[in-house]
Image (cartoon, rainbow, N blue to C red):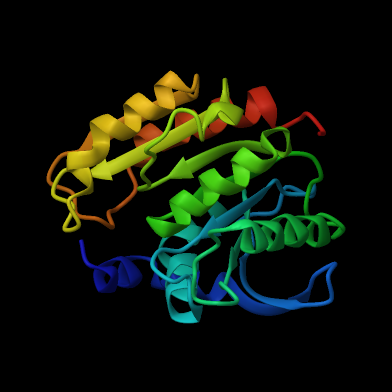
Length: 229
């Protein structure tokens, strides 16, 4: 499915996405697209930080907030989709830290729950999510990487017993399906609590299989979401 069709299918949810400029603890500002839960329970909502693919620029992040962020929001998550400050997704120490600072600021809001946060990302965003989780896994519930790659068990040793949901398209235009087995081997050897699969006939960016993802989200939130780092 093309991004255009996914946008059309979620057009109604677009109105719930709002762009904000948020000041971080280091004094810099980050542009963030916020997607509020479709229905309010009256309680603070769990936070999910979702990172778009490619450079993570404003256009990609806005589209990601609409066609995927809205799906998470329909399931009760408060979704934050940050825009990369330097067109490098959120890869590398400096950008990783900006996400950690963003979470600290957002969790001061009355309608966002404290404690562990779910990380999610597409392509470069998925690998950003894994990087961020490796730096402080106790701060996060898990990672939804749709898709992402990993090459080293050693690099991922910090994620022992950490929940990761990984999906890669079976007809990925970038050939990532050819690296699926190596990625699974690296994460499994590191001891990651991994739920991984190839999606038959799916491209690099694909419609989420919520029938598979929903039970994983609920299980992960139940087992790790109530704990405060």
